[in-house]
Length: 261
Ligand SMILES: O=C(CO)COP(=O)(O)O
Image 1 (tube, rainbow, N blue to C red):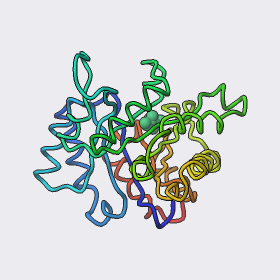
Image 2: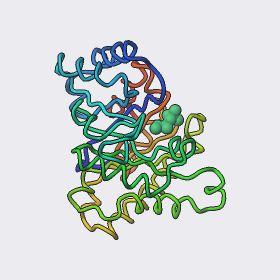
Image 3: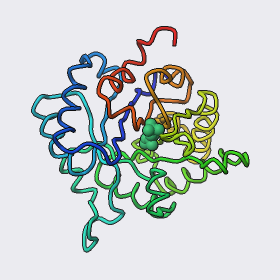
């Protein structure tokens, strides 16, 4: 974390919580966090598509300083793509962010680098910041190729963007072996890869790389977030399981207050 990039804590709910449960969670979150805390740390939820309209109504109605977005979007602008959701539809709902290239999409829906790049393009074309997820599986890490693998996923997805577009991208380093396993990467391991990601962006795009926020994701909890956030290149967290509990998620957002952690 550095003074120049605002910390971002985003909760990826995955396929959990219906729209009523979504309202309840966001309300609890709003009660648990002060305006100062929400202004110090940008706080975002990524609910399932069907919850977004309800979350939008609550956030707008109560003027909450909580952002929201989606977990995926179509690579196409509109048309005969049954079951898909266009970036323009998400923009109309007030989404500020959309996760792109999450390892669960790459793994279970066979999303490759080309498709991920097209989704990044669609997000930016609609004024939405993609949260671009990259990260290696266990076999890749054991082979010592985790940096090359993650850098390659990143560069493939941002190739061709302008500096101005890149500045709107949020990157999330999520090692697959740390997702939902309770096995968090050490803060040093996360910094190693995230530092390399920023360096690769710097080599390709120049100084704008210093403005790109790069998050860590994988078993982040209130008990480990402060150590992770203490690293210079880590600007926030993409939180899965722990974001489904309002009190725990609020504790994560309050990481600057975790004394001496
Ligand atoms: O995949 C993740 C967030 O996108 C991380 O999930 P967990 O926090 O449940 O490990």
